[in-house]
Image (cartoon, rainbow, N blue to C red; front, side):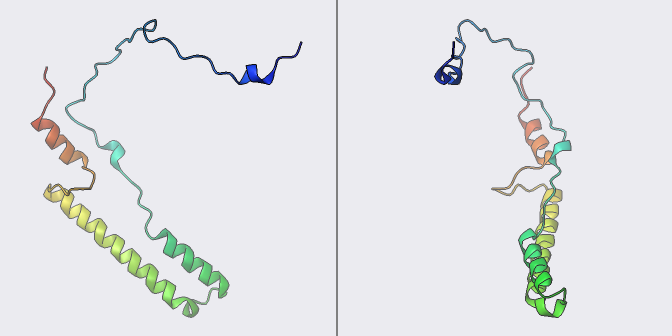
Amino acid sequence: MRIPSVVLLQKTPPQNEKTVPFKEILPMKLKNQVSGKGGATNDVACLHEMSVLFACLKGADFVESACSKEITSLKKCYKGFLDTKSQRKVDDKSGSVVIGQKLNPKQLNKYLRLYPNPE
């Protein structure tokens, strides 16, 4: 006997919430501090400019004088990246909060100390 393909595509029905009780394994509250281990980000600087430069160099048989415009564009982009990175580092050390940017672990721990979880 053949099983129709429609039967095989049917999904199992969702479980009934009343028959599956919720079991709290860990307490449902935030900790009073964060570690900061996972906060390291690998920023890729000027990837587009670098790929344009490599394409130009490949087309010009790796003669740098033919791609001077792309080289200056890459240098300008990288200088801007270093400036923003150093400014972010100064902001992190000063402890000032910039609206629109993510909080670093020090700033987040500072706010969590102000508003701890009740015991």
